[in-house]
Amino acid sequence: MSPPGERPPGIAHRLAERGIDRVLLLLVPGVVFVVVLFAYPVLYGLQLSFQPEEGGGPFANYERFFGDPYLRDTIWITLRLAVPAALFNVLASIPIAYRMRGAFRGKRVLTTILVVPITLGTVLTAQGLISYLGPAGWFNKILIGIGLTDEPVRLVNNYWGVLFSLIITGFPFAFLLTLSYLSGIDPTLEQAAATLGADRRRRFRHITFPLLAPGLAITFCLTFVLAFSVFPSAYLVGLPQGETRVISIVAYESAFRDTDYPLGSAIAMVMALVMLVVVGLVLVWRSTMYRGATGGKG
Image 1 (tube, rainbow, N blue to C red):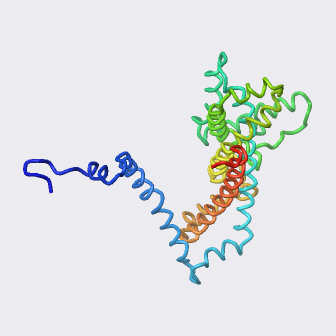
Image 2: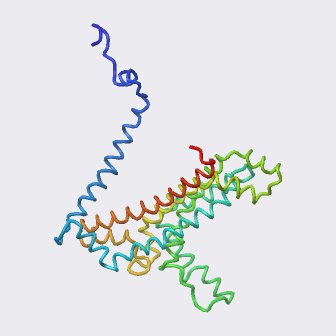
Image 3: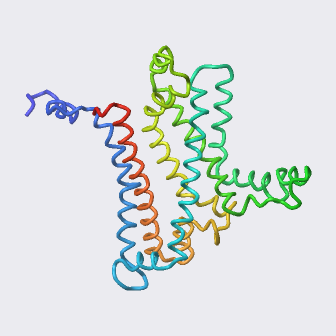
C-alpha cells in the first residue's frame, strides 16, 4: 500500500517494477483490433462451416466442395491467375527498382507514375482495360489499321483481361516493397566487389540477389494474397461463369445468392488454407535463402 496522501502507483509503474517495458502497452489497441476484426470473424466462419444446412456430418460442406468438380476446379482457376500475376509483378519490379534505388533527375516523377495505379481502384482499371483493349478499343483499331489482324483480338472478358488487371493493380505494391528492400542493402558491398573486378551482372548475381531474395519472398507472398482474393476483376473483365470463375465468386454466390452461409464459410476456409499453404512454401524457401545470404548464421 502507498503512504497516506501519496497517489497509488499506476499500471505503467507496476509494469516497470516487474521488468516489463511500458511501450508494450501500445500493442493493446492493435491486439484488440486484430481479435475483434480478424480472429473472431475467422473463428466464427470456421465453426459455421461445420454446420451444413442440408444436413450430414460436420464435414459435409467440405465434402460437397471437393466432390463437385465445378466447385473444386475454382482452386486451380484462381491459382492460374494469382501465381503468374504475382511472379510477373515481382520479377518486373526487380530491374526497375534496381535502377531507381539511386538518385537521378526525375526519380520522384517516375516513381509517382509507377505508383499511380494504386489510386485507380479495380473498377476504374477494368473500365480502362475495356476501353483500350476491348473489341472497339484503340489497341485493336491499331492492329486492324496496320493489317496485323482482320478481326479484333479478344483481350478482355476472358483470362487475359483479369490477368492484366491483377498486374496493373499489383505491380505498384511489388515495386515499392522491392525498392525498399534494395535500398536497405549496403551499396559498399557492390563497390568492393567492383574493385575486385566483378562486372554488374556478377555483382547482382552473387551479392545483391542473395541479399534481396528473402525480401522478394515476402513481396511475392503479399502480391499473391492480393491476387488470389481477386473478385471484382473476375466479374468486370473476366468470364465469371467460365474461365475466370475464381473461388471468391463461388464463396460469394453460395453465401449471398443461395443464402447457404455454412457452405460459403467452408469455401472461404478452403481459400484461406490454399493461401496459407502457398505462403508457407514460399517462407520455407525464404528461410533457406536467408541462411544462405548470411552464411548460415542466426
